[in-house]
Structure formats: C-alpha cells, structure tokens
Length: 356
Image (cartoon, rainbow, N blue to C red):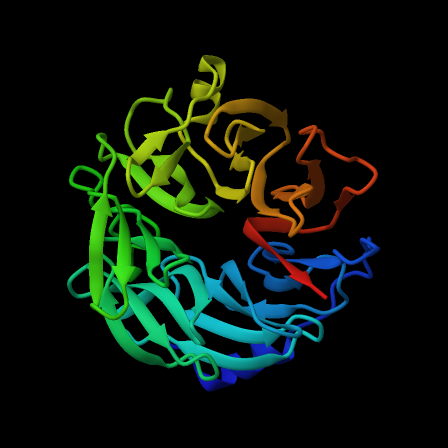
C-alpha cells in the first residue's frame, strides 16, 4: 500500500495552513501545545497543534502522535495503517516518511523507547501481531518481535525497560478495511514484552474474550489503566480495567445507568498518580476514577475522544469530535470553561501535550 512519489510530494506540499485560529497559551512553567490528528472536512486529514497556522497533510486518517525533542513528532496512520510520518509540528514540514510494504500494516500507535521507535504492526499473511523496532531517524524497521496476539494496539514502556502491549484480538486486512474478521474467535490479551528475550514473557486476559483491549495509561509503578471496546451483544458492560502484575486485570466499576449508555466503548484513557480518566464517546461522558480504581464521577461532554494528563497532574486535557479542547480540573473533576476552546476540526481519538 505504498504512496507513489508524485502523490507524496503533493501531500507534503499540501500541508496548508488552517484558519487563523485563536491560540490559548497556558502561561507559566507548564506551558504546552496540544497535538493531535484531525480532519478538516471530508477526506482532509491533518496532524498538528491546536491553534497552529500550519499542519501536516496526510493521505489517510492519523491516530496517535509520539513526541520527540524540540518541535517534532511522529504520527501513525489509523488501522489498518500504511504510513508513518515524522514531522515538524510547528512548520508542518515532513522530516521522514515510511510506507509499509504490501505484507504489513500498522495499528496507529508507536512509542520512543531506549532511543528507538517501537510500533504495533501486523503480518498480513499470518494475521499475527508484531512489535517492530525501528530506526528513529529513518523510521525503517530494524527487527520484528511477536506481540503476543492478534491486533496489537497501544503500547507503553514500563519502568523496568520492558514494553506493555494491548493486543486487541481483532483481525483486520487491507482488502476489507476496518471490517472485523474474527469476532467469534478473538483472543485479546495484555502482554509484557521483553525486547532482549524477543517476545512476550507474561500474558493477561479477561474472562470474557469479547473485550478488545485497546488503550493504556500508566497510573503509578506497576499500575496501569486499560481502555476496552466490547465486541459482544451485551450493551451494559464496563469500559475500563486496571492492571497490576501481581493481581492481573480488574474491571473498573461504573454506575449501572452508565453501563448501557456507554455501550462498552472507551476511545482513550489517561492517568495521573491519583486519577484515571476515560473518554466514553458513545455515552457522551468522561468517566473518572481515583488512582486505585474507585469510581468518582461522570463528566458530561459530547462525543469525547482524546485525553491526556498535564505533567503536574492538575488537569486532564480532553478533545471531542466536535472540535472542542477542554480542561478538566483533576481535583474537582469540573471543566474549566474559561480555558476551553473550539476549533473547526474533528479531533481523532488521541492527543499529546508538547511542553517547552
């Protein structure tokens, strides 16, 4: 699924400025920019900073952005994805571009780990998930490791140097797009990958195999929040879990009234040491727990999508599909309307905060 050179040049040249959005600057030592993939109309896919006059044009929807030092980031195409792009988010200029070969595709996520880029990918011929080690400058693959399952999605570096991978369990192929091909036999898992040993050294599963394990957030040492997307017929199931190595996966509680409305679907999750926040897009709420998984509140917000915790833990920054960027105060779990802004875009499921 390579992009031909002529089209690539047109896309790079088409990193057009968006409207001159007002930029809300957060003053002080915790100043940051909100970065995300987004759409600005039908089939107009972009990645960049909220309020910026420049953006990166993409051939398909972007998903997650991994931050690099300075003003660079890497954006990964939404699954089944065929491009990875390193770019300058201040200018919109492309720095490096990688097209997947015909027998591979990506799942929209990657991290910078020990000076290398790690991505979650698929071997299309076998359907097996891969953890690909890449050169950070060129984005070219250096090695491939089994992810421990099918459909690996988000991944996180752990404190001990290993990597946590959410294997969603869902098989997709390029010829069928986002159609889920194995819902009757899916086997999602949360795997601990040891790069030195070359694969999974520990695997955790939920009792119901229809819970697709998708997104991850570090809460504290050896404690991680897990966002779920349920693929069964029951529409009254929780949307998140908590994982600890010694106790495994534990479902997070939520009120019965919110089980049905959220439809078992969390778009994204973020955490600080004492808060876990998940965006429930279908339920039009943001769900909040404390750092140990005790339910706290549901904050109404239409079509919430991405979420990230500020470095000081005082706020969660949340996007939605209507173009809003809102500030949720961690202590009070109230939206600070004075800091919230709306932009003429549709934000994707994730956002990142670039400090400095």
